[in-house]
Length: 159
Image (cartoon, rainbow, N blue to C red; front, side):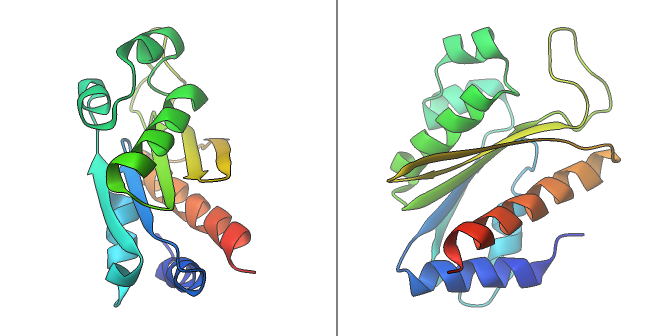
């Protein structure tokens, strides 16, 4: 289960710094945006999200090069970075997070193992990359990825 108290802390920290937030989500399917929007007043900080579950939508909506997806795989730090960096521009936000991963049930040939999640946080100062391998059931992987991202955002912005 996603800790909505953490989502509230993220929003307060970003509001105090006058920063806007957006997300580009694949395996989480909008869970991050949903958690953030569960908090009253989220619109002061959160501008929107792209849910690019299909690879071709990562290319079409978020300008992730198809060649990058072919070369590194959709679950890779390179694709997560591109999702966050391009999402920051597309959504016109100060901070953009991204999620791509394999929540299962199976590993496809040439793809990341089940439980692998790549995430990124893009700001005007650069990018923070996160990779985590979870040994959890499918939906718990998705929730754990969102919770981990909330922890990282708190660590970066709540100062």
